[in-house]
Length: 254
Image (tube, rainbow, N blue to C red; front, side):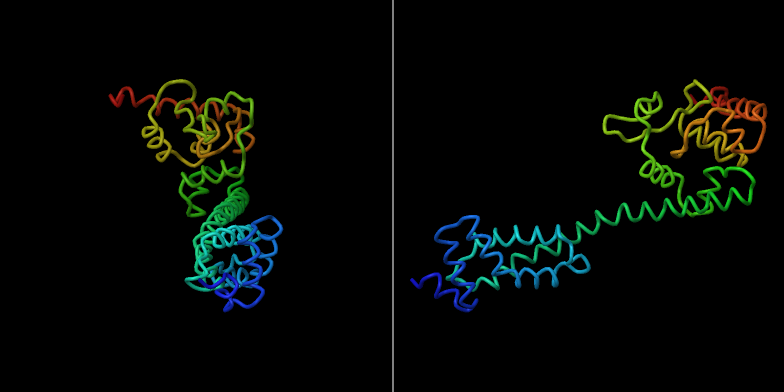
């Protein structure tokens, strides 16, 4: 049977010699030397399979690990090392796609956060008060569910608060807020039905009182300041909203 060196001659003398040395005595030193020798092949694979992510240090590190795996599976009797490496490094295409997908998620959230902030500022200038979440959603084209998601991604729940403990599950994800103003058990579906039927100012009161859609839960005085109305008006409107929420019982929707 031909020697390793002779069978890898198509790879060039350096490939063959360094692979032969590594195969006979694998070590950190021989592995590092062989990786340095095949680096042009790794760079070619990154350029071919990495796409726009080819310059990622993480992807190059993964490519080097795949190359070491390829050294272990290479059979000199069946081909040359360069071809074997390029074949094994084809997996970088999937790895690169996964890495880019992970990166794109916070980028999209960041883009949505900026869009929401811009909409809030614009609507606040137009209305002379804080907009309701419904108005923000209508202006941005985002759903209320998406609005809640990006707010939770952008603003962490304060640790040590009653709201943080009550509104979070074991995984730390925020749960649906309370459905009443304050204290009675009203279904989420009925709460959403009532919310959709309110005027924007009353929707904003629900947003801030219940902490809907990722909004902060605020005291009545702060809600009044943000909505440019009196605290007594907040109390009156809150009572009216609560009566609407309580109508679920009288309608037999328990």
